[in-house]
Image 1: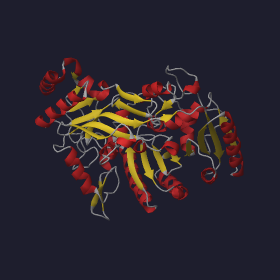
Image 2: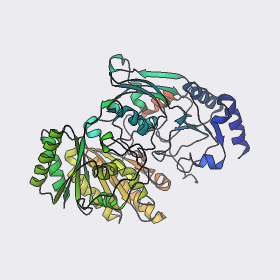
Image 3: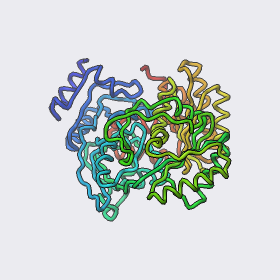
Image 4: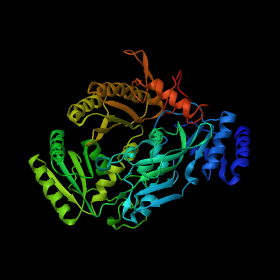
Length: 497
């Protein structure tokens, strides 16, 4: 432990107590962001303690990175400065829950899986089935902006986040929105926190709308030799009266990952009708009904026995009309094998390669056919294994899975990344580099000759970039909250890990 870290830890102990402060290389390594280390870890137990820490950091010009269980710290650029990790898992209380009003107020450090287990007792849940589900906190999920396959039916967090309490960069306790929809007035400042990666404020509490839990659910998988069949079936389902909970297309590359791997993250029961209890378990393997060399369309649906029977009948009929090579209806024993992997697809892709690169692309669903072909061409030209999952609403996750992480591979990944950004722009969409090795994040920070600006993992600079800077300055006037993770600062030379 260095003299600096010892001094910082001692001063923090005077604010929140010795039991809530830690320092030392072994502790700090667990909170590193892209190999960028810090001096100490503070674990506050209340919003007031969070505010005191932020005020202290502002006075001392210390950079803070808020975090939960650290499952998504790899998103974004590395911080340009990092002095203090702010572990929010000590804030883990349910402040208010009214099952009749379908409203919930919960601390940022509360685990999502534990929260849904409590909500299921009232036949309700939060449709945030995100990657690393068994470990994720509600605050970290909102700050990362990660979605789930359930966005097809329930939308994203923007659709059910009613309000928030947070600490800004000056150490002030702030509120936005309310507990129920009718009490929400003023600007929706709380929605700016979604996907902000802790750069605007430290979220301490969230007000959310809950939803009735599915009474019973089933899964459906259809296999096709080409992407056209899967897209045809998706279009047919979208034009029908059916409203599935999830509707995703998997490429053969991702289907192969599903067929050959199990997520490293421990599993917990998701829905009560799975009859698996609250203990951790591993996902069952996919069966011979899942064809890893083909394109897959995967759907989930819920309802009464009569509704489930109709879904099974209509989906099978539509799949046969689209010339599926096989179809399968998944019950409680088989559904988690695919549905759980869909939820964990990003974590599984990161485990599948030593230098996985995952892009998030937002395009109109009508552009998916052309986009699939272009992405495959880019990957094959670079000699890279690849996989994708496409949501019916237009969001697409595309992964490059190199076998090694040497300099030549990073160079090929950087060139492919530039082409993927250009590809997204050509169909009037948007791309961002969601996960990437640190060396690629730096290598990809290159000038854009057409605009004279810089490209980085967030893509071409947006027209409202100046407004984003103003928002950052308004929320965080001292620039101490995760500096440069979201609002980029040109990098003159790669940082040394």
